[in-house]
Length: 321
Image 1: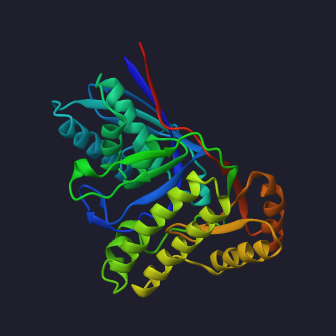
Image 2: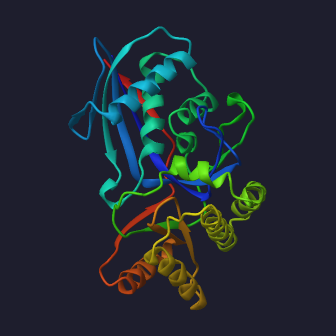
Image 3: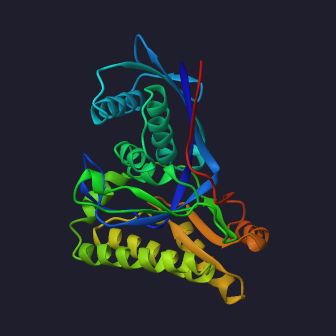
C-alpha cells in the first residue's frame, strides 16, 4: 500500500514567534493564520526495507533527509509503534526560489500520509499535535481557512482549531518576493534571541489579545479590522527582533509597509505583513488585487515577483494499493 497527502501552507496573521519548549515546539503565545490555496506540498509515503527520501524528483541524503527520518521516528514514538523504514517522495508546489518556507505544508502532509499508511485512526486534534512536532506552523495547516493555534504547557494542550474553514471574507494575499537570500539568523535562533528581549512578556500578552480581536473580526466579517490587527502584530514582531539586536527587514520590506499605507490613504483596503524574512505580504480584498499588484510592480520597478493566494483547504490524505 502507498499513502498520499496534500497540505497547504499558511500565513500567520497573528505571528508565532517564541517557543516555551523547543523539542515539543510549544509556542509562547497563541497564533492565528489563513491557510492558502496557491502553495502546497504533496507527499507519497510507503513502508520500505530502507529509508529513502526524494524531494522534487531528487533523492536527498543530507540534512533534509535527516530531518524527515528523525521526524518519522518521532511519529513512531508518538503513536507507540515499532521501528520501521519508509520511502518518502515529496513535491513542494511552493516557490522556494522566491524565499517562501514550505515547512508547514511539508510536515503536515508527512504526518497525514504517515497516519494513513500506518492505518491509524486519528482525530484532527491529534494530527495537529503530531504535525506540530515536525514544524510548529504545520499544526495550523491541518485545517482550511482561518485557524487558531493554542498555546499550552504540555504537548497535548497545544493544537490548532478551525475558526472558519470556508471563509466568507473576500480576502487575498499578495506576496512580494525580493529574492531568496539566505537569512543570517534562522527562525529558530531568532525566536531564541527574542526571548531575552525586555519586551518579550508584552509580546506574549499582545498576541493573546490580538488573537481574540482577530477572531471577533472574522466573526463580524470585518476585513478592515482584521487587516489592522494583522499589520500591527507584524510590526510588533519585528520591533521585538530589533530590541533583541537583529532584524529581518530590508529597505524593500519597509517600502512595502509604506506602500500599504499609501494605498489605504487612497481609500483602498491594504495591509502589510512580514514573517521572518525580507519578503512581504499585502492583505487585500479580491476586488482590489489587480490594482494593488500593479501598484506594487510599479513601486519596485521590476525588483519584485508577485504571487497571489486566497483561502485554501485543510489537509487531505488517501491510500492506493
